[in-house]
Image 1 (spheres, rainbow, N blue to C red):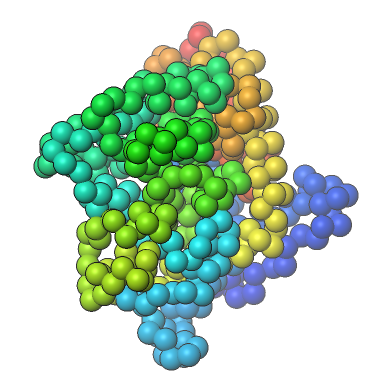
Image 2: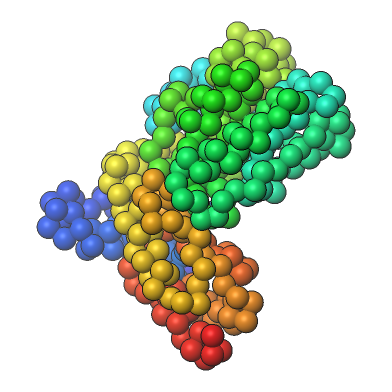
Length: 407
């Protein structure tokens, strides 16, 4: 798309399709929303929201508008066109209302990796104190603890998860039963990155707290994919990625902590005010000058979801995932890692393919402009811009390649 066409598309984002249309023809509603609110070409089937979501027009407009106002020094209330020093109370209030917590307990970071690294580095542990985790964590989530292990001698132990699990309890029991006498921290994902399995966070956190353990949840795949209230999860710390399912631009992240746990956490990047514990989570945003436009875009993403209705969004994306799971379950050459239990997945399902079929399938997806995670383990992660025809294209391509390779 040429720059002039892009600026024209962002000038006045179209109004959302009406509720009347949704009630009359829901599929037409979603197709119209994709066409008018996203810049995705018709030829593109995007099935990789689990890595990086697609930013809608109103969010792009908010970023562009803030940058223009900053350049012209016409920002309201004589605010600096930056973040990294300011409290951003109004923006945190909006984000906290969506995430289900107090704004005082919420900080903005650049991504979940930064938030997780801050948490891992900031927790005081004695040499020999153990961090217990699952064997399904994202490398970015594991890295902070591996660094702590290498530098301070805090063992990082991983517990095998049952894939696929028979029930949510099976996931909780696998982790909780592995707690040992040296365990001081439980670190796990709210939704496992590789498989999309939803962990029973509250059950795990309640059991851990009863044993005096600290709980850290990697929520990179949680916020925006399934309903969430941070103040009801029971975890001590949480890190999130708004750029996956919250419509936010890349470069925005979330750090949350319970008040008494934030007070105990050391910041890693500091400027003036880092030691003002009465500022609560705000201390962890004092990192120097940053691009404030990204935060304005994240807030615009929340407002975009609010306008559509998050329950409607959750219903839609889970329905797409159910459709994808049913298609996968019908194929004998696919190992389905997502159970037939709605409590165990949101909008991301996962399958394993034999190498004989995986490589030619990847090549064919690239040729047909179907975006997925490359590898023998494949995630199908949908959002409201995903069309039924995109799922048809994915599985139709898989079936064609399987037939050609004789699998």
